[in-house]
Length: 421
Ligand SMILES: [Fe+2]
Image 1: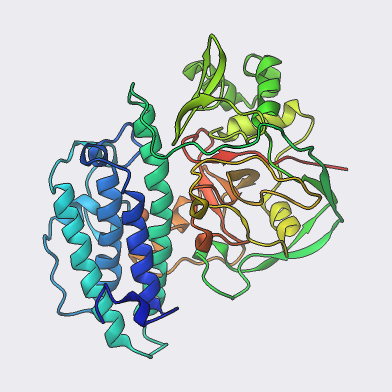
Image 2 (image 1 turned 90 degrees about the horizontal axis):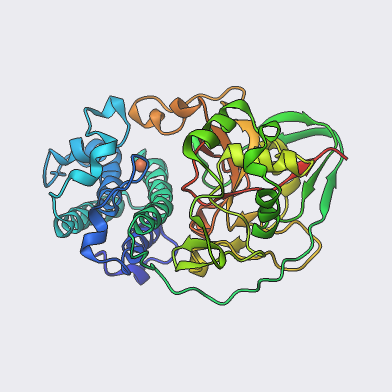
């Protein structure tokens, strides 16, 4: 089988591998070569680096251990394209990824093709051996690549934002500016089971499933809108220390925050920069690009709080994994549809929770370098639930635990409120 012969193997791992790899490249299509090589802050990796790093992941964790004939096109790529896997060897400085002009973009695409060909041949060789040890690592590599598809978009958004021309990645679709009312979903107190139930793929940090007790609570049935967040701004939310945690207040003062990232106050009102360029803030769209500090302060102002991740998962259990994913190609959160049930659980924006990103009881990471994937980050970060408008639909699930530090804003991050009844 060749990498162009996708339809020959419907629903196979090989087909999914090729589709995911092609999807990464499809996301690059609106870009010009100059766009691939810029990093605008330490958190932002270049598009070229994402393309190469995801290939390095397959090379390092699948091809090196499971394909004795595999030869890398350049042994020095491991230094450039290892992200944070200390046990996998020395690596380049993250903050300087935007200073690397070689390999060229074309050479990185060649690198991808080289890895693709070897992977497809390896999967061919595995055949129907469902217990082959490479299979779970290939699966992990696909979900890793999907994570980087999202990062590729959030990073290029920051790159375009920093460009005074404010280029657009995609056209802006017509959306309603009429918000729908927000209600509350009540959940009774009780003992519930959360975490990975053993079906389908999950990252190690979603395990083990375990019981939690939650008191009765209410969860907002949609996300907080720009209009609601504007009311917080107009009520001098960014200038009232009683609303903020101490570290958050210090950050607000130090960075002179007055609004979410990508918002600007103009003579004609607030504008927002999206992957469709600059446009007026739409009051019906979910507020986006707010830090945990801002989400927490807003919730306090609104006489509510952020949900814990257990509350979020308990309330969302049984709901369809549906929403405004990257597959819809809006590349921006959309207004909540009308309706009674829990809306916008997935897609649109990742939802900050009040839960620190910690190990579930009994958690143990995989041995070796691959165990550095999630476990070593369980410090000084918060869990976010759901998925965003940059997440592939096939990457989202109920038990997914995303995580970022308190001051991170450049991902598609927003707010869903909770409260005690
Ligand atoms: Fe990565």
